[in-house]
Amino acid sequence: MSADGKIADRARSAARFSSSRDRGHLERQVALADGVVFGAQTLRAYGTTLPVTNPQLLQQRQLSGKPPQPVHLVCSRSGRFDPDLRFFRQSVPRWLLTTPQGAPDPETTALFQRVLAVPLLPPSPASGEGETSNSRRQAQPSLDWATVLERLHKLGLKRLAILGGGELVASLFEVDLIDEIWLTICPLILGGATAPTPVEGLGFLAERSRRLQLVSVTPVEQEIFICYRVEHQ
Image (cartoon, rainbow, N blue to C red):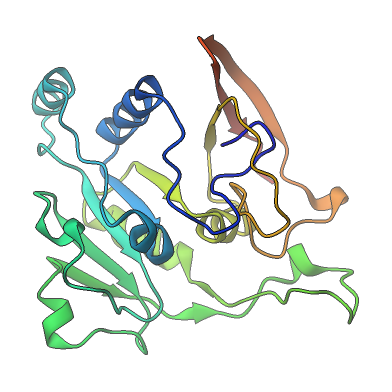
């Protein structure tokens, strides 16, 4: 993210302002995971995902008994995508998380090795408690993440990396299902009231905020790598 906490500019363009060192750091996190999850807007912005290409990381996965690539799971309520996105030509296992209403047509289904349809839950009252009728944003229904994680666990996906965007991260924070958060602070200012941040959604009131424990801080050249452990409620 930028030094002022933005993960993209006001046009929500793909964020390509981090260093090659940061991209290598991200690849190491991806290589540790059984599956990586990202939202449909993130996929549409970038058009691709991040596969493991580092030979050492590929060897580590092989020695751990893992397949070369983690499963790449796209989260989309509609299940509709441009089939010409480069993502659909990348050599990674592709799964789709969607709703029964958003189950895609056969042509889209053919783009994924597996489609998991999970019902939506009503908005959680926790994050929006105390909001006035003049609030600019309304809480949105979320996937039943407890069911999602149970099904993924049974399918062998026990360690997940959530790659964004902010709405997806917020929905998992709302149900207390994030264990760690990794941030890279990059040396630029983006600003903008509508520019996205790492955690979007309706937001939390201060007394219900998610508390963190600092695990590590590593400055490398012009960037700062931070890891927090989430205190579960």
